[in-house]
Length: 193
Image (tube, rainbow, N blue to C red):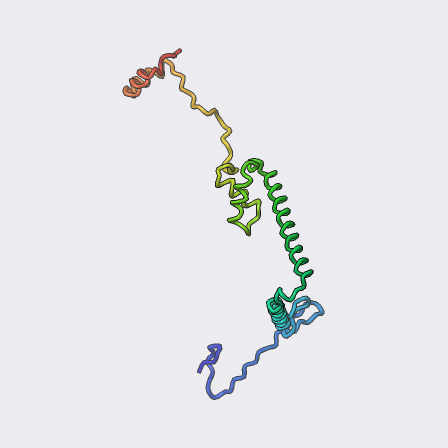
C-alpha cells in the first residue's frame, strides 16, 4: 500500500504523519507563519480596505446621479458654469504652452502649427512631444540619427592603380595574354616609366 509520499507501508502498522511547524529565525526575532512580516499588510486587511473603498466610490456615484441639476440654485448654476469655463480656459492655456515648448524644441514645426494640432487630435492620450516626433517622421522632416559601425579610417577611398614597369608588362603578356590585350586597349600602359 502506498501513501501520499509514495512510501511503501505495510498494512499492519499504523502510520502517523507529522508535519513540523515552520518558523524562521532571524537574529532574535521569530516570525510566526500566521503573521505577516514587519511592514507588510495582512491580505485580509487589504481585501477589506479595497471592499470599503469600492463601496464608498459606488455611494459617491449614486449620490452624484441622484442630485439633479434642477435642484441647484441660480447662483450655484452660474458658479458651476464659470468654474467649468475657467477650467476649460486653463486647459487651453496649458495646451498652448506645451505646444510652444514643443515647437521651440523642433523649430521646423513653426509653419505647420495648425496641421500639428489637427494631427494631435488623433492621439489624445499621448505626450505632445511624442506626437510631434511622429508628425515629423510622417512628414519626412525628421532625419533619424543612425548609430552603427564606425566609419572606416584606414587607407584612401579610391584604389591605387598599379604602377606598370616594363618587367611587369612583359610578365603579364607572357602569363595572361587576354588580360594584357584588355589592359593595352584600355590604356593602362600609356604612362609607363
